Length: 71
Image 1 (cartoon, rainbow, N blue to C red):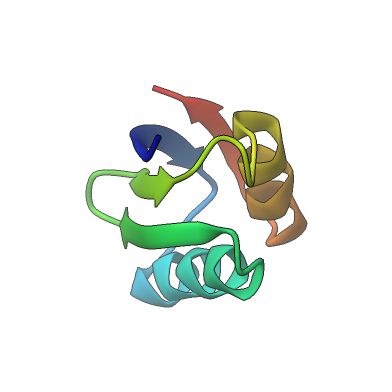
Image 2: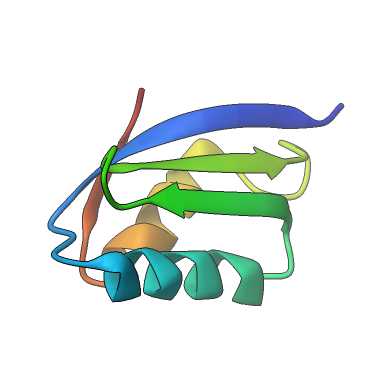
């Protein structure tokens, strides 16, 4: 079952930060779609929970240098 969730992001300073988060999540190969919006300070991730968990998504975002919580 495909799920779409919004994660609140803290620590972004510009649109390049948003692109960095998108790239890191896409590089996992486990998300179907990701759209990070710097102005809204959030990331919308479409994924299969059997392939990646919310916690794994948050850890990936944190590895990019930002903090995240499920909205």
